[in-house]
Length: 474
Image (cartoon, rainbow, N blue to C red; front, top):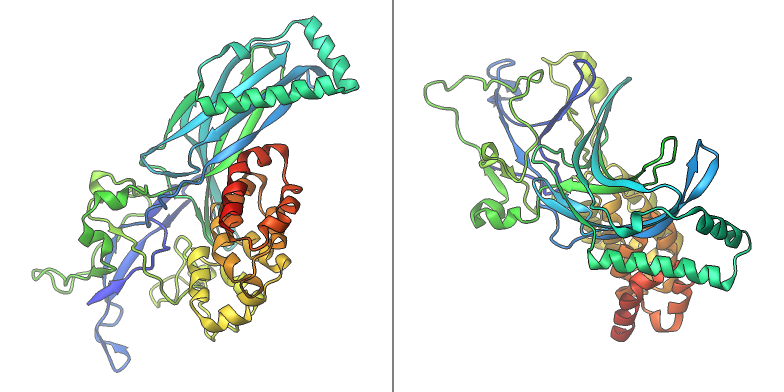
């Protein structure tokens, strides 16, 4: 007998919160002898728990070139003592457990205080809720410090006064100086003159957006000034942590490509014994990594698309009530859809919102000709933007945009759809989205300038090559 695992399930995990509270995602195989719809052994069942490691992250990186920002430094909350302009680049915002991520940083100090240090960290935020109960646990899982540069030194009072006078009545010279600083930051970032490596620990929990459990990871760069009672400018951005993309290459072809788990019979010495479940209060395992030695035998979710796109995995959620469970568990039941879903945009949006993997859900509907004709072919720009925006995991939104784009408007993906998508996603996703959808635009040569009119100067610089490449291939 073989059991298929869908490719979009999350890794086994456990996390302890305040007091005795905890959340977990675990997997069990249960077996029971039945005859005529009744159990031959009453409530006795054979039960085996096993670890699951989520499907490895895509090999293609999702970089983030953070637009340089200028933040004013205040003393005692109200006295402006200058500004600091800074920017950064993250080589890949999807990071594997046990891997390192490269962060390039640059800043220009135009304040009356020296920059004492600049540090980068990744914070893990776990929140879970079941019924009226909720809990959370936050911690820093990675940290590093950037080296100092000459641009971190403070300016003198005369230059500070001059800068304030110019800022009250900006001239072409002043605007040119601001542009020069932005270009300087851009060049420093790309030169990698101030680079730090962040090591994500094997014990990090996978980023996850479930009905009951949510795990978020945020990267923060913070600049500390030398004075007391002064502001410390900060940059924050989301990152996604999962199974390393290189894990596919470290396993045998048989283990990775096989879509089934072989269920072994109980040992002959104890044919009717029930496997002892994991002790939830003091778990013996942690979230799988990349992988630790104890996870060498873990099952890896393989690319198998199943027809249960409305299923939501969230901690200890159960699919059916069991007679030997406490009745309070019913508040954690997530019902499956009983009737066939009617192909409408509203149905699609609801499926995406509550799915484990938005990409798998959308792909399953794209493979259905009825959904393709009735829903995707008829999407207007605003509806296309709704499909992108409803995707729970932001990192998947550019990929969803590229997946749906070729079918909208009866396979006529025009500039209006790109503009609508740009307005729907977070600022840091606009550049990655453009990289993916510009080659799909059918009227780029005629209306490319209308797309450019929606972009900032920084976005124009970052996507210049993308526009040129897409225009030459139209």
